[in-house]
Length: 353
Image (tube, rainbow, N blue to C red):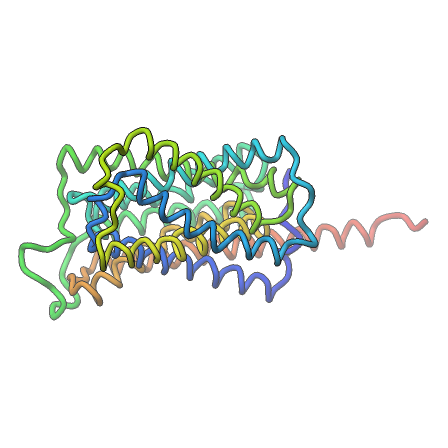
C-alpha cells in the first residue's frame, strides 16, 4: 500500500502546496475566460496547443535545468518512453480536448454541460489511485469516509455551479437574453461533453502515471518540462499533417497573442509544473481534488469581468466545493495522524534490543 509522501507531512510545505494548487485553478479560470473571449477557434485545433506548449517549455526547461541539476538523475531510455506517453496523454490529448470544448461557440464559460463533466477528474483519479494502490481508502474509517465524501461533494458542487440556476443574487451584474453563459442542451453540446469527458479522464491518468515516473526520476520540474517537450514534438507533427491551411497558423494581433502567452505561462508552465510538484509532494489525489475550484473561480470571474449573473445555484455549488475540498484535506491529515499514532504505538511496544 502506498504511503503518503514524507514531504507532505511537513506543515509549512502543505500550506505552500495547497496555496499553489488553488492559485493554479484561479489561473486556469482566467484561461477559460480568455479562451471564450479571444476567438482562438480561428486557429487550428493543434496549432494553439502547439504555441502554448512551446512557450511553456521555454519557461520550464531553464527552471528545471538550474533548479534540479543536483537532484536530477540520469535519463534512461525507459524513463524517456514513459515521459513520451505522459506527453501524449497529459499534453496532447488533454489540452486539445480542453481547448476544443472550452473555445467552441456552443460551449459556455461556466454553467455548461462540458464544464460540469470536466469536474469529475477528482472522482476518477481517486478510483484509479485506489485501484493502483497509490492511495489508501479505508471506507470503514473516518479518514476514508471524509475523502470519499469530500470528492463527491466537490464534484456535485461543480455540477451545481455549472447547471444550477435559481434566483439571481447579483442582479446588477446580470445581462439580457444574449447571456454568454446560458445553458444550451444541443447535440453539439453533448458532443463537446464527450470531448470534455476524454480530457478529464486523460488528466486523471496523467496524474496517476507521474507517480512511478517520479519514483525513478525525482525531479518534478524536469518531468513537466520533458512531457511538455514531447507534447510539442507530437503537436508539431499533427499540425503539419492536419493543418495545411496557412491561415490556421497565423495569430491575430491583440487578444489571440495575449491568450497564447497567458496559456503558455499559466496553462502550461505554472499548471504542469505545479501538478508534477504536487504529485511529488502529496500524491495525485490531492492535486485532482482542487480541480472543481476552477468552476468556482470561473463563475466568479465571469460575474466580475464579463458582467454575468451570479445565481443562487452558483453560491450553493461554491459552498459544496469548498466543504468537499476541506473534507478531503481533513481526511488526509487524519490519515497522517493515525499512521503516526500507530507507528508510535508499535515503537513503544516493540521488544528492546
